[in-house]
Length: 426
Image (cartoon, rainbow, N blue to C red; front, side, top):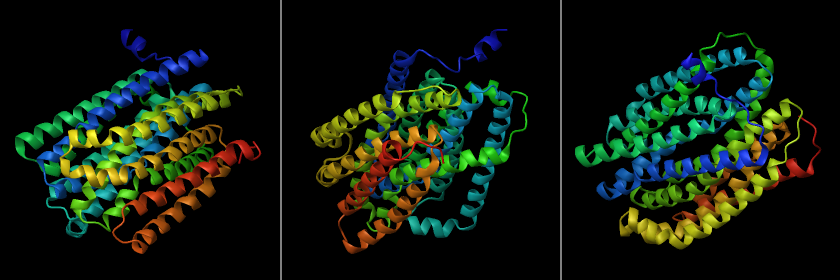
């Protein structure tokens, strides 16, 4: 009986704005704590060489290339929609299939890495195969974490979603510090920390959603699901591509010691986006639920304004205190080069943060006409960025200026489809 009570988690809370601010406030606090814990790994750069730190940042970005945002939002959307319409048994089958398919995808990647291990290590300048395989283990956890976090987000179990992220952050820094300081693990030890943190987060989300994926399954309409999943994956995937891939491009044009400062600037600047993401994360399932019930929601304006204020103030504060933060956490050698890049990096994150809010609103309302233009924009970015790096050799800021321009274009595009185009569904 107690187990049934534990699993009977309220899926929807209809107290409008007070509930939204309470939930988003908690999730923002959890994100800040988790981000602080994860950032606590980076002072270990003082204990390893710049080349080793560059390897760690690059491997970390490889795990970020997993479509975590699309995966989480797909399962958040499906969970919110099925719970709103009483189709929990269909959701159970969706979760099980998602769990199996992500493992199969990971297994294919692992076999590919095994076959071409030496070439991959030479291309990325890796000094140890262990670093590569620990990164692969982190990749698997990074597939399962967003899947089950999306289930928690969709059922609006933000309390445990927040605790999962906090415990994951603590696990990441604790394991990394232990291995690097006690065992001199270098980039490998720091990646062990990432694996431990993401694994703890995934484990909590899996345990907390067990009542849903263990339920008796029921068949669902695969074609209808694909029509919803495909645009969600592409739309949120476009945002994640702009958020994560610049480091991978720049790595191909600059040596490890120069990339260290770029990695520091990126770590600090991406913290801006993680700070404001909880607002859209809380908004998304509420709008999905409202749309499924044909109810009205006015959360978009509140979230957009809050995101703009937090992102702009955060970017300005980062530029002011950046030298002190870099000097405190990293060696003084990083300060000069990092501060040349930080204003460009932080500025590029502001339009992306605002665009992310609009994308969440459009996807939650199933207004998918924006997806194809987003994909074309991202494809253009993928070709333009290496061209600009070749055209302006030795200038890292060109990558960030290019990123900023494309983020502004994305914001303008999403604003048009939100406020300027007809409101009909695609």
